[in-house]
Image (cartoon, rainbow, N blue to C red):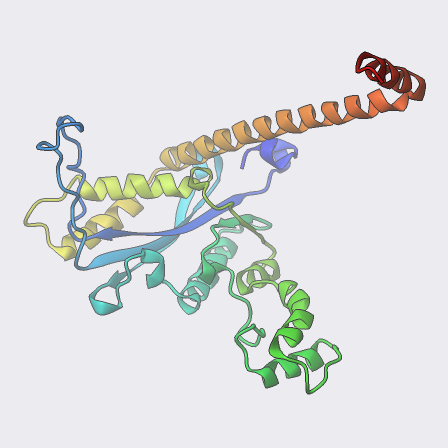
Length: 297
């Protein structure tokens, strides 16, 4: 994040770390560009069927400016067979993510990166609470135990819905495990807003990586070669390209901030004008009387 978005002195700006996950299919390629007329049904090309094995991968980019932005904590694994879900997010789970997240924190510590802002999206496995956190689907006896845990009164005749209504405000205050881990290491977690992937610069980094892999695809490309090219594309990321992605996202964020600020200012002025019109009782009464006279009352 740039200094303007953090509202702090550029010399004291906090380092921002963006995390995310993605995937690439065995047959992923960049040969989708063609010259056919999209209005000609005979020329419309069928969409590629992405079936078979795929590499799921994860990593983080660190905003270190033009010269020192880096890609760290890279990891990949193979998704295949019946366990492979249509949405690649289904290939990740909370246990895997916590293991990777600890690795990220360790790498930040090894690089002496302290008090950073770690940005991630709202995937469910990013926001899981501790395993002993009660949920509405918990058994009634478990909800009763939770009431005792939070010091809440209950009676044996209370329905699950009643017990949960008492517990939910306390559950909502329990922090996700990732947030607790980050705070223990001296960092802070921010969850990016949904439906605004353009504010996550690592999404553009994924496009660069997958583009480099896809451009090398040939009909005889093996799955192992895809994995090797994926590793190489991640290793060859430059500080300049990473920071360019970050800067683009910051410009988009600033544009949104300016737009919202203008709307807020307009609303503030309108509210003041409304209050000002009603602040002078004599003028308002006269205006009302004139309107009444015009209407024939």
